[in-house]
Image (cartoon, rainbow, N blue to C red; front, top):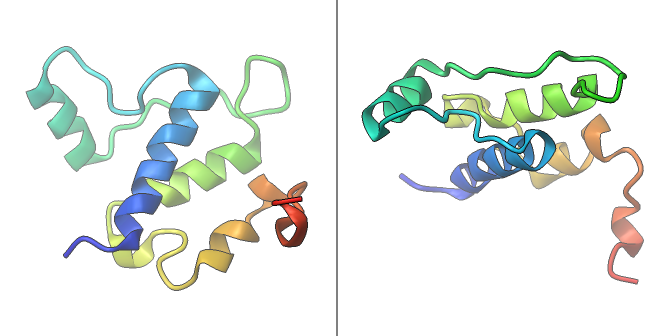
Length: 98
C-alpha cells in the first residue's frame, strides 16, 4: 500500500538532492538505480560542520527518511516526529505561515 510514508521517502530524496546537488541513488542505468534503491546503497558526503560537509542533523534526517521499511521510517506514526527532528530546530511551525 502507498501511504503518506512514501511521501516521506520522497522528502528524503529531495532533501538529499537539495543539499548535495545529486540524487542519492543515481547510477548509469535505471536497472542500476533500482538495485541501489533495493540495497539502500547511498553515498553520503562526509558528515561534519565544515562547508563541504553534511551536518549530522541533515544526515540523520535523510537517513531516517530513506529507511527501506516504511513502518520504521521517520514520520510513519506521526508527522510531528518529522517536525520535531533537530534538522528543523530553527523552524517555528506554529507561525510558519506568517
